[in-house]
Image 1 (spheres, helix red, strand yellow):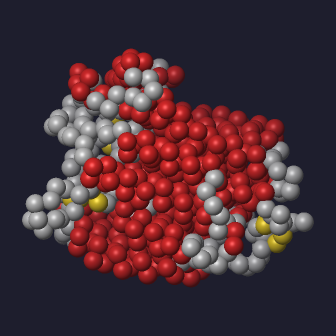
Image 2 (cartoon, one colour; image 1 turned 60 degrees about the vertical axis):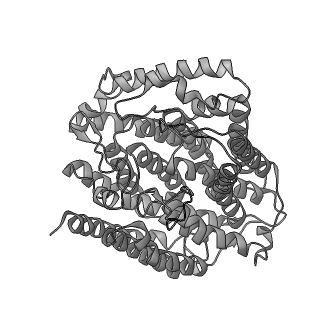
Image 3 (spheres, one colour; image 1 turned 90 degrees about the vertical axis):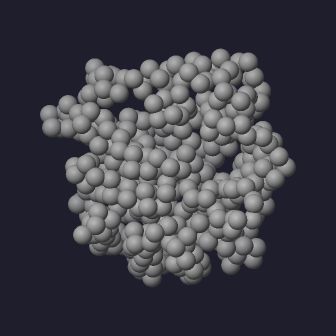
Length: 517
């Protein structure tokens, strides 16, 4: 039996178990028909990906399936999120048929989902069935579009050690990709998530996808085997089959592109679960889901997501209703967890990578980040307003053994290439979304459950702002950043509605909701 077949069997077996165990919880937030369809599409795409020889063969099955299922699903955002990392976001070149045309742009699963799921959903919003989904642009739209205009206007050559020149067609390409990759995602999330039920369904679907990735990650680090690596190699991914270790431990990736991305996604799923847990009576689920997600976080062996998940947990406890009691409970749980982990076999492994605990493992990356931050700040001071688009050529001495200049701080990279103007637009978007969600959670007509939902979004955004300081703005980081912005925008509008705020009744059948006066 080939390695690919073995990997497929392991992935399907783990996923089947998780979907089976998670079904009772998932049905609290989504209709059974949606859950079954999403699960079946997830399995179909996974099997087809492992059995096909290239991405385009995969698309023959994936395109009609995604268009059909996305149309049938009552919540396209939830459908999008459960499939966001069904396979790694492997970049492939679009074939031009020997027409002498330069490469158009890389294509991957993210863009496939955007065109097959988000674009049809955006088209349907022209005449929405729910009037609350029909609205004009606001400050968040303008900030996001302004940031896009800046990126289109300022050409940043890729770090490929070759000379690239800008052109009109290159500018059009950047504009198209920004609309497809970023604005389309925000637009659909911010418009379709028009009530609490839809937001919670989206959160639950994303948690379910991460609940599948977490045990896969644990398996990978225990068996020293990246299950999706053969798929990446077969599809011709650059740098595929690259195993990353800390000490003797393999850093798991599951169906993501990097351990940092896996850790970030699991940390956000943990933030969502802090709200969703309030709707399940099962003690096993309330304890088991966080343990599963944290098991995946440990398997990713990434310090930034560990810190981000801790920030999310504490922020949710401090900002939620009855914050003093929850904060005290959170500190007790955190202290007990630290003690239990410290005396376990994992304790020494974790301590090795935490400088606060005297760990020196991976200290080279910390030194690299410090030096990179210092050099980046020097270049920013030289071109403060609109950045230096040729900064890569001035950082050649920081090129790593992998042959790249690893800009592992999103704030530094944005300021470096787009200046303080770009950084201001980038931060203004997410901080305004954060402020609106926080204000909505404290609205006079908000019940305790509504506040808890808002604080899960606020805490997840705060955690994101911490985590992007230790990672490049890539793949899953980008998608969830704008998903969180869109969810926060949708949530904040609920508090300003003149109609009563909907409240979940965990004991009522799916589809029946209660209202508070």
